[in-house]
Image (cartoon, rainbow, N blue to C red; front, side):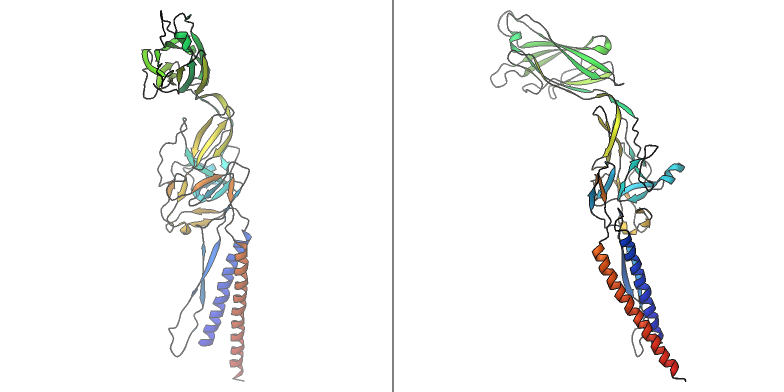
Length: 433
């Protein structure tokens, strides 16, 4: 019994070390595989006897586990849609073959990195056929709320490079200085004209014509102006008229003192804004708050449009797409405009090592991994998302080669045990001759 148990223990040792060598060889083979998670082998002793007069060797058993929660370092690349997770969390992806079937929502798989490029349909896909998944944004660039405990709502991130877009103007900031000398007695009362371009809902260029007319008193200085705003899209129709009074005190001279509404939207002194309705809808115009120099001022003798800022853009073509650290996919257009078109969440689980390992460095949640949750990148326990980057293999070559030497020695030792047992059995056989 003792000799045969020694033989069995030796065989178990060979099998265990062969399993460890298989794990080591897999780690070394994937030392250059982006996103690879190394396999670790641990040994457990088997006890078939609790001692006594006769001892029976139980041997050893090998257990392997893929350390999915331990990733490699990041390396930079030149592709804006090369993505890597820095910290905890995984990117949601799906097989391109599964997406092509279009039979309901594709099966969500998880990975930590990928070199995504557009395919013939504009979807972001890796060379191995993994499609990046994300939540689609609304036309205004906002992402509606989606359930976070299910993959429903995720769809392939699609970059349509032939897409046209135009952003309507909704806000204009006026930084203009009006000449104080024009409101003095004896002035000619000539209006100061200014045209400000805006873009309507269809990306067309229109104009708000602004006229500043000074109030000329019989004597002294009035410090008062009347401003009118006309819309070119409505054949020059008046959309707003306001009476402006400027301060001439020592500390606040030249700043707005009071604004009186004649027509158009009411002036809000808390924000310094008025709202006028052009043909395509309301536009918020900032003329400044009382007592500040952030908008309209009245100083010296020069009419000076110092800073005219507005949002909106004409129609433009999409030129590129990039993912920021929070997972928002930004489309950039040749007009300089940028808009959010998707949000890619990061998926987290209580026990990442409990997931099933699949091909192409992908993983599938299981009952052992626990229920997953979809986080905004950078929120909760998750890390952030890095573009222009890939995650290297988690394999440490020096460590694996050291483990391989140890495994080789252990394997040879177990082979020696089997050889010794064979010799002992041969001696036992010789006794009956």
